[in-house]
Image (cartoon, rainbow, N blue to C red; front, side):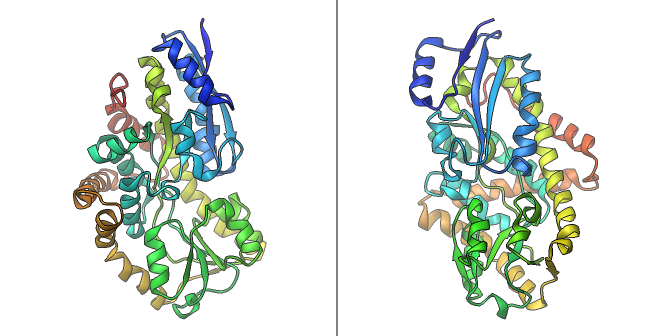
Length: 382
């Protein structure tokens, strides 16, 4: 059995040499590669999307795909998971798309309409299908030398704060880490101060008083120990986060694999997507249940705070169109959003009545009706 490695810390030189000599992988080639997920290994987007998924991928490839996994910001910093995968430092990785808005503007336009969303299950299906099928999104990934393989959607973002936030007036002057433009615009509209830093900097920011709050899922109280520095949680729904990719591959690496090796990805990604989504929802509940034991007060927002979020959700779509046209110069952001909305509506209808705790049923739907419709011999091969 042949063996080759495409994942080293000097990946630019190694990958170039490899692709110059190897051509398309034979079915019996063993391919060693780097995978990078900058979140902690216990976080859903690392645990289920990489720690548990990669062994299944290796098994499904009959041992021909041999990943080396880096969790945390070890191989690449959080904001480097587009350029680092594009350039071959890692061959597979997770990227939070709002960290690189100018490189992937189409993605960032769709990230804004997540502000009004609340159910991560149809959202995860929809954002994955959209990125795999809508021409504007496929071209975006091709331009960045990325093969988009899998999407995700978090549970709703809430406010984790170092002081009590209950009413609209409490938001005035508060420095809040926000994930994207929609949350930033809402915060500014209520007198808060948006702070755009990676989520990896939330702990230190809250600990040192550089942040008053962080907009993030409640699970991060536990998965990133934020309950050590944030003793108040306000359950105001600031929407989901689905920007970037859960699994994105260096396009040259992807095209070097055999059809069977590429198929192994699509055979194993359904479990990763469903497991991470289930852990987000279950993990939120667990973290909130345990929060009082860590000195954290869980707060129901006052009506005026909830109303401000709901009112802003009504204008998010228009703001997203404006962001696409005025800031990014996209030709038709309305068409992009409409295409995504149609896919979202389809999955909301399909998953209506499906038990969100029925892992097997959800995995089977993802396998047959999403990943099973992708042709491994042609997808991202142009």
